[in-house]
Length: 367
Image 1 (tube, helix red, strand yellow):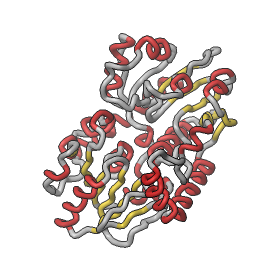
Image 2 (cartoon, helix red, strand yellow):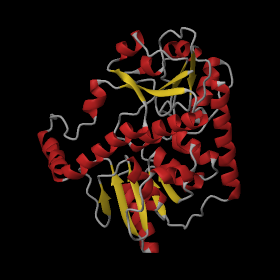
Image 3 (cartoon, helix red, strand yellow):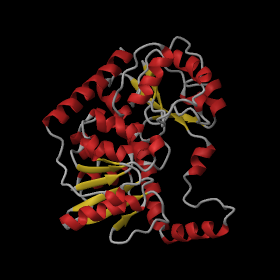
Image 4 (cartoon, helix red, strand yellow):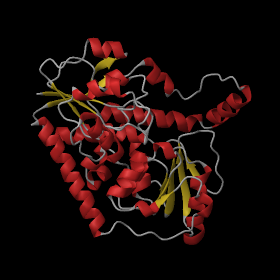
């Protein structure tokens, strides 16, 4: 049997790279006799989007400001890009490249089973919607989704007439968030289970084995800044003031300059895992930053930087019964430090049950 996985694996984004790796590794470990590949759907737009230097903008002052910091931090940004490239080349088995939606839809790789997911592959406003909804003939193959996300919390503007027939063509359907599962259940008039992000298919020991060693010699608070900016730093500073711990910050934006912390710009996927695993606290607005902090049983505070896209974080925090660790948008100034506890036994038991049910969903879909 040949299985083809379609997901986001090209972005210089830790969550995208690591969830792609996790699903393929889990399936290859479970089914070593099968041929399992990620479909290398990668357009020129995908590639150009993650160039180190940004294109010229109308506001020349903003453009020059951003380019100044990119030049200043270019060696680190270049190292980060190389580390991502090496990680994908070393860890993912890929098909030949498909450089456009038409290329994929008109000549899809011949597979016995197509699996789409995880990450925001079901976003209703994606320019690649037809590709990620596998809008090509099955030809006696199966189509399944594993932990897809819509990337939104409100579904009133979703084009149901376009989405419904695409979803009905799937043999197995599920969702990474409860909001998305409820939406599909109502649309398709059937139960749609919630499953965990692929990173939970691997144990913390497996993640530790593929990460690098400790990168910071002393104890620290780790910030993973996706969109939270200075609000994350405010929260971390309050923790630091009470604990005396240093702050290490990984940000996606080269023009972010934060005082009183060590900024990191050169981390690849392995380094990212190490920075979370070895931290005393994790402060983030990222779903995958949240997920890895849960996996490694860290003390965490999760900030809602984008309320309209917070469903993923709220879902996983709610499933693990730790929603009280969420800091709402605009509330960073009101945050009072509490030494929040690691996941207790009931939390871990609940998480382990969800991991097993997620694995069972995949087994049922494939078998």
